[in-house]
Length: 177
Ligand code: S3P
Image 1 (cartoon, rainbow, N blue to C red):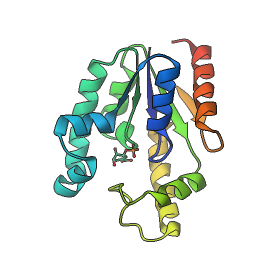
Image 2 (cartoon, rainbow, N blue to C red):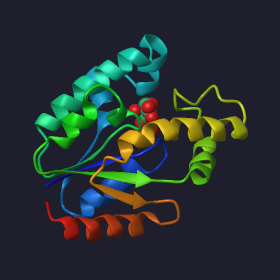
Image 3 (cartoon, helix red, strand yellow):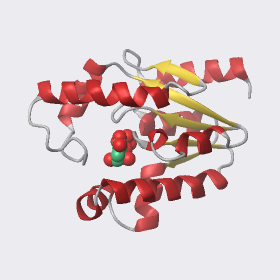
Image 4 (tube, rainbow, N blue to C red):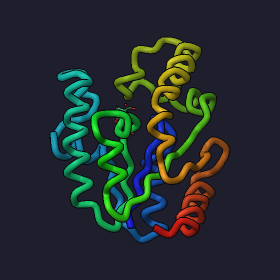
């Protein structure tokens, strides 16, 4: 079985994905890292040199390649991955795969992302914490449409990484796909 994690930037997809893969003895893959490896440059540079549309094209391409080879793995997506092109459909039709949404509230997301927004191409120009909060509120509203089509939703706002991993394992046992 494969587990794919989606959710907004800063919701902990990579950290939780890594821990979950250890707990379930699966391989761990991070889509952003796959993009960096295949294009041999940082995500930040792709955005600044070629723009977001080019990044989304690359993301679509690398997602397709990754899904084709996915076996007994946990895959952490980028925050925007399920929201572009045919990506959600590609994910949902990958055999033996469960899509999990790590759902974090706007306030904790704002606090977390305010501290490390500068390395994030979509957030780096936002000047105040209030503006960041507003941006996340609107952006998350648009993106939830996609995230909420996941097989499982896990509330991650007030739980430690270990508690989140345990909650995912418990819910997976219930649906046994
Ligand atoms: C993005 C999220 C990032 C990365 C890129 C775009 C987004 O991944 O893919 O900067 O559109 O939300 P993380 O969610 O891992 O930060």
